[in-house]
Image (cartoon, rainbow over all chains, first blue to last red; front, side, top):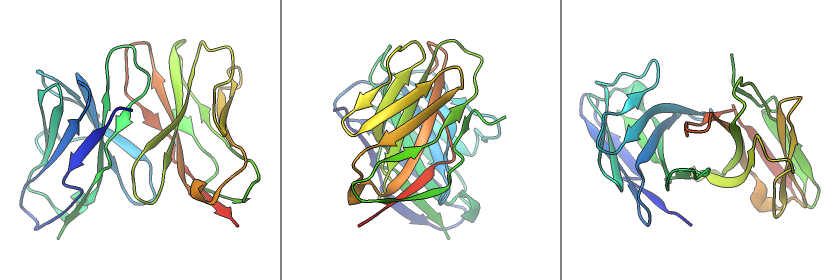
Length: 116
Length: 115
């Protein structure tokens, strides 16, 4: 099956620093990737849709200047949490779709961000 | 309004028994898709089963089956012959429209399988 990786799997940073999370589709091309955020014991909340070669589409309430998304190639999307604060601590998960007409989204293993 | 409603925060099931996880959805689209994902404590999201709104038969994948009742807007997941490894969080999700691949997730149900 299609494999999506995320790096890093865990990151701890100081308040005020920026953190970049990578999402890669390893064996397929993904024109569209999604970024989700999940707090402990809660559901996944869609943050933004990342489209290769164009600007990301952010969900209502998500600060685009805070969460920078870049989809530079058909296999890589990055999420940068800028000037991170403790309230940004969360589990960030990306997903990718292999192509048009495909129903299944393949999820990465997630990145646990802890901001001290 | 919630698009996906999962009313069972947690459930216990005896090993080898079946368990039904409830999911109701709300959409005005005629074309939509319903998904179930499993999330173990490791955090990965594992795809279990998919049901399209135009599919006439209920989807089945091994021990997983989806009880799709379109008029009632429900898409319950049935796990048969539960195993200890089935203990996890289960999420129901929906994609709306033929060209929109965004997923809306329910709150999830934690399943604990007892030996």
